[in-house]
Structures are given as C-alpha cells and as structure tokens.
Image (cartoon, rainbow, N blue to C red; front, side, top):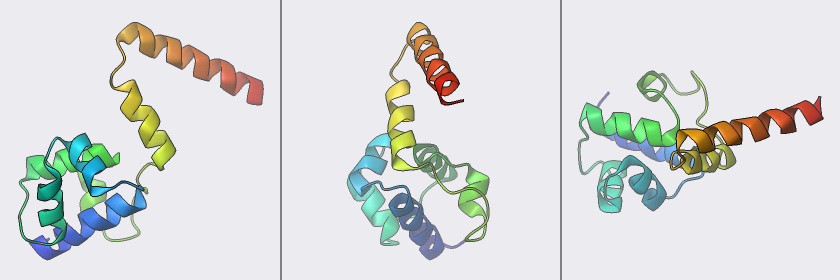
Length: 109
C-alpha cells in the first residue's frame, strides 16, 4: 500500500468513525498536524503509528489493509466514546459497569 492510499484510508476510516482529526490524534497519541500530514500524503507513518491509529479507530491492522468494503466497519461514535471512557476506569469500576450493562440487557429481553 503506498503512502497516498494510506493517507486516504486514514481519512476514510476517521470520517466513517465520526472523529475529527484532533480526536483521532489524541486517541492515537500523535499530534493533530501529523494526522493532517498523513491524510494529505505529506508524511509516511510507521507500522507502529498505523497500529495506534487502528486502535484509536477500533479496528485491526488487517481491517486497515483490507480492500475497501471488506471486514468490519469501525465502531460507531457512541460505542467509541463508551470504550474511550472505559479506558480510564480501574478493574473494580469496569466490573461495576459490566454489571450495569448486564442488568440493562436483561431488561431488554
């Protein structure tokens, strides 16, 4: 995959995920200008950077390099926000959240 395709793919996945360049940069721990340069094909990312971007988008490297339309779509923005919030929780808090989700799901059945 050449750099033009990589930059286009990052933009495609970011916009599909409903994220701004700044949001993606923050989630991937890179600068917003770097995301902008990638999307404008002015910079080439390392595989580690692509992996961090993929994690921020909720996809795998395989999804990133899959042909268009193949694989799963990135997470919808509401689920992404939920997961981003969960990253800051300690194990006990995560257990509590999971318990609440289990209760909510039981009431839907």
